[in-house]
Structure formats: structure tokens, C-alpha cells
Image (cartoon, rainbow over all chains, first blue to last red; front, side, top):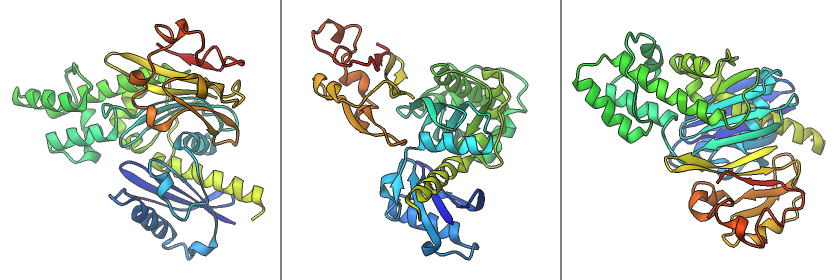
Length: 261
Length: 91
């Protein structure tokens, strides 16, 4: 039986197809301005090269910001539950999850069954999100993928006085004008974001094991900063950006089985 | 599950926490709150529980006047009507 999870995030759209307990294929695309179209394209893209068609998929669960706009979904489930479920599939020992997405950040506790026991999210402010890093990458004219490794080259600490994405942009610009090296600016910004995420996590309980999901988990500089702040070595999934979609696919499998599809 | 709805900003922390293990989904808080902060709906695990309404979550610090300063002085409030004591406020 094949099932699918579609995660329409604020910046990226992810799709996962599962067969019993393994991932058949997955895809990551940009979220376009039209959610329905993005959902259709994500589904087509994840089915590409699998030899499967939509008729082969028994059940689809949608999650993420755009989850209500996935016309072919059988159900929609919040990304909080999906991230817990997906992270637990990779690492059953995980109890604390930090999901750092394009435009929000969530801290989640789950139990030994991958059920959410506590969660908190910050979706009011772009500080500490992927969008923030995009703005900074743009200011420094460094490709987004390179800012994490670059931040590790820092030799001097320049603490940022703000984690507001708008003010940090001007602060970064003024530091640039003073001749501060880009790695040092990036280091300061990564530090500010890590502190913010850690403050969010402190409202739930920080327990072993710890994992980071979402697009920012691909930033090695941020992962290292978080490890220092949190004091736990994070377990990292091979591609932690798809964890939400993976969790959705796991819910899809459970619901399809319950329905006897 | 402890569901924390709200946010922290420069002015403070505004979180309403609903303990969904305690909440029985009776909906008394929905009618008790004059600002209409709550609703009841099925959560992801199929249990009907109280939640902070979706559109309220990013502005809850403005819409809910706060329990400790304001609503605790009212005879009826979301805490007083909640028999299982499932609701908590951070401000």
C-alpha cells in the first residue's frame, strides 16, 4: 500500500511517498504563490520516477501552512503533530524537536510513541526563521547554502543587539561598512537566532534526545550554535527538511489502515 | 498534550496553555470568554478539546486582557468555568 504526505510550508513544499515502512521517494520544491498549484506540482514531482500514478496512492495527508489548500488530500493534520511523528520514525528516542522553518519556529516535546506532549510556536516574528537568513544572505551577497559554513570561519565575536530581521539587516550593513568580516557578522547573527530558538525551547522541557528539523537544519553553523546553547548533541536525520511530510505520510498510513483501504 | 498558544515579543510573554489530557472538550470556556478566544475542535489524535482560535493566536496578547491582571477578578472567567483546570495563562 502506498501513501503520501504533502507539507506545504511557507517557503518550501515537500512531498513523501511511503510503501509500508520505507520511503519510496521524496521531493522538495519552492512554495509558489498559488497553493493549489504548488500542491499539484509537489504531488506530480514526488510520483515522478516512481512509476506510480495518483490512483496508486491509497491515502494522502496534507500538513503545513497550506494544508487546507491541497485538493486531493484525504485529511489534514497540523505540522506540529507531523514533525513529532516524522522525527520519532527516524529516532524513536527523540523527546525534543526544534522545527526551524521558512517563516516560523516550533519547539515540540513528544513521548515514546511520537505523540506531542507539549508544543510552542513562534509565527509572529521573522527573527529566527529561514526568511531572516535569506534576508541576511542577500545583504551579504552570499548564497544561502554557504552562510552556515561561512559563519564557522569567524575569528571574532560581534554580538548583535537585535534579533529583529529588519533591524538586523541594517546592523549587518553598518558592520559591513565598518569593515567587519562577513564570517564574523554571520557568526553574530547565527548566535542571535540560536539564543532566540533556545528561549523558545526553554518554555517546553529540554530532554534527550534532541533533533532539529525544517530547512534551517541544513545550516551547519546553526546546528553547531544550537548544540552549544542547548547543551545536547542533536540527532540529525539524513534530510530533516522532509520530516513534516514524512510524518504526514505516517499519519496517512495509520488512517488508511484504520479505514481498511 | 500541553498546547501553548501565543507568542513572546518585546513587551512580554503571552501564552495560553491548554492541557489536552485534562480538557474534556465541554466548551464552557468558549462561552465564558467575552473576547471569543476559544473554540472546541478535534485535535490531530481525534479528541475534541478546547483550542485558541486560529486567527487569535498571533494577536492573543491584545485580544485577551490577561488572566492574572484582569479576568481573575471577574466572577466568571475561562479558568473558573473549567472543571478539570485545563487552562493556564502566562500573563
